[in-house]
Length: 351
Image (cartoon, rainbow, N blue to C red; front, top):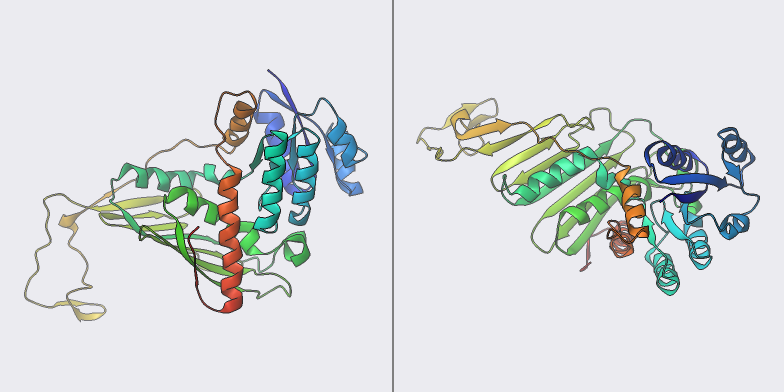
């Protein structure tokens, strides 16, 4: 069965959605777009897409079953609600809304209309994330207790509308929403505290270098860092577990797992060990005979699987993977991120 979709907002991500669906999703056709900007409309027409004169024309098109909203963040709620009430299924770019209250309005509209509503949390299909999640689920390295996730660059700026607060710009809403969603999807436990250190080094309006700290009820602690001013990057992931350590160096998934060998107990000598740090016993290097290093597992993952799931849900064959309830948890955590920054201390919660 062939399905038809349209896109509101034909910028960088809107164009990506159109190209990705057109080239990689066999049973979905992108008919056209609506964008208020003349240059975007001209580009869409040049790419063979129908250009709707108004958003209303798009919403009234009986051929369109699914609308992807890829506008700046402050327009998401209005377009999503209008499309749902027009009888369309809706996919919304992240962050889904400016706050939790706006998302609750969309959720209510989806319930009243019986339409599908989801959020394009595409980075749940990132190979690095899937690799770490697969390792933790296997239990091979024991239970995680400290998870570090970092996205670091050195461009020293937030691009375009993402540098403007009224549009919902800033690093928390640009990358933080992805990494928090990954944590909440990976760790099956409520968040019980949130703290954040947010800096705006190169912007007068929005955060551009950030650290977010989460504590979960099951005892796992997680930190995510997003930087636009880092000239020496740290690993993409560093995960401390009770029986080993996982390191994923970068997007290409270079990395390793170091685990304790079975039946290779560490024998403590009475003598102090002399290291580059001076005399010590506790921090001396672990003897190599007590550990084993292995490669990261090979995993298969593709961003296109998101839209394949959306089609499966529309056809009644699958359950929705990225749900509004999950997005609401993320937005509630993000609200506490901003509150923690404003108050200057961590915030207790149960989310």
